[in-house]
Image (cartoon, rainbow, N blue to C red; front, side, top):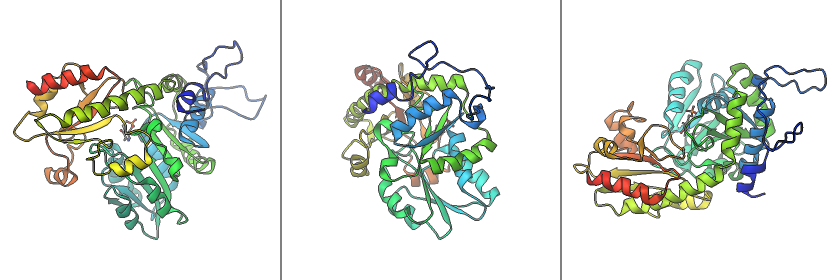
Length: 376
Ligand SMILES: *Cc1c(COP(=O)(O)O)cnc(C)c1O
């Protein structure tokens, strides 16, 4: 099966009792155990609703096994903590999702886990590894400048050294990028974003080989961040339209990127699909589509970013992303507010930078909304 078919069919349609074509929501947290040795229990990550979604996601990310969590951060923290001990070293990118950055800064130090934050390129990341490096944690494309990291190069550099490679694949989604096919061990998603896709669900997922997932599961049982049956069902329902949504969203984003490039008041556009993007070459090599996130910078002294947000009618100023509706935010006053102006400048996050999560609307309507807000 190809991806759109997998979204619809993989893991679903297993109901045999009444022959319904959808997976029923199994509300039980207790299951009679005498008849076989499966012993389902929500926190054991083995209930029928969890299994159906994991099967679908495994087929979308070329993984053997997976675990569903109650949030993206539960997936990320459980995977890292299951593989790292006091005295270990981990390399992460300096452009990290805010929650992951806080996990490292507020928990790792206390636990005695050593870390290095490296610039978002394969060479810098590999150079930062040491003899006691046990994990390399990547995000690609990054937030909010959409820098793409050469995942295959990092995977090759880590191979045979006892280093686990992890990629937060949230921004690309499984439709546009499959890190496992590039040699990465563990793929993580904040399912709250594209996988759920309707801004109404919190969930996370970790996918990898059976061996790696078994190790994560051993810690996950103790840490307890499982997903409930109703939300697992909602996620399964959402995944049936994942390819349809993401392909439309990516197409809209590509058109908006070119449209924004042509605007007088726009200083720069960051979209991996543009030839002008610094990491376009890597994106072309490792992504099948360029995604639906883009950044654009308003010229200083021109249109005021906050005023622009207030003038938008259809595009909603909101912090999350990946939903069917287009949303926008100013990283300098939201996700990157905790950094000093100097740190933001070093990272390339200007005060006039806007981050757009492009939805499935008609692109003409999105363009019209942006135009009227810029004109105001
Ligand atoms: C939102 C997000 C997360 C965290 O996911 P939650 O579901 O909010 O816990 C992690 N990584 C990226 C890239 C995200 O966008």
